[in-house]
Image 1 (cartoon, rainbow, N blue to C red):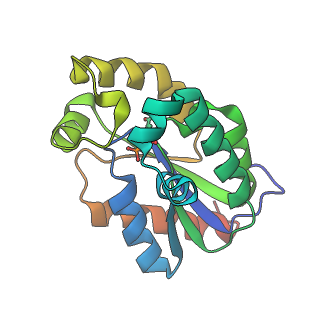
Image 2: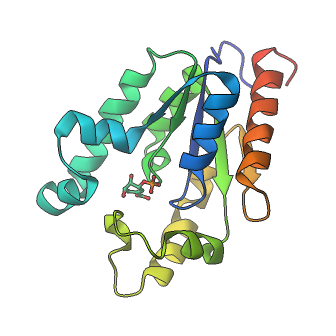
Length: 179
Ligand code: S3P
C-alpha cells in the first residue's frame, strides 16, 4: 500500500455481473457506510438511463460523465462505491479512487458472469449478437486494469456474505495501517 493515501472509502471495481452491487450494499450495511453506485449517480444527474446515453450520445460521452462523477467522489468519506464495469480502464479514474478508497476488484469467470447477466437488459455493451463472446473479449481486454486494485477477490465460489466479510476484513486491516 502506497503511503500518503487516505483510506476513508471502499471502491469496488470489476466486470459486469461480478457482484459489485450486492457485495457493495452488504459491505455498506456491515460498516454502516453509505452506498453509492456510479451508474446510479450518472442516471440521477442526467435524468437518463445508461442505455439511452449510450444510444444517443455514444460511449465516449458516457465515459466523460463517468470521469466527472469519479472526481466528485474524492470529497466523500465512509462510503462504499460500486463502479461501472468499464470505469477502471481510464487510468485517471483508478488513480483518483486510490487517493481516498481501498480499491477492491471482484473477479469472476466468463461463464459465471454470463449466468448472472443473461436475463438482464440494462447493459448496452451486452446488446450484441453474441454476448458471451463479447464478455470474453471485454474481460480479456480489461483484465490488466482490474488487477491494479489493492485487493483481488474471486466471487465464483463465494457467497455474497463471504465476499462482503472479506472486503470488510481487508478494509479494517488496511485502514488501521496493518495491511
Ligand atoms: C459497463 C458496465 C455497466 C455500465 C455500463 C458500461 C461496462 O456497469 O457502467 O453499461 O463498460 O462494463 P455494471 O458493471 O455495474 O454493470
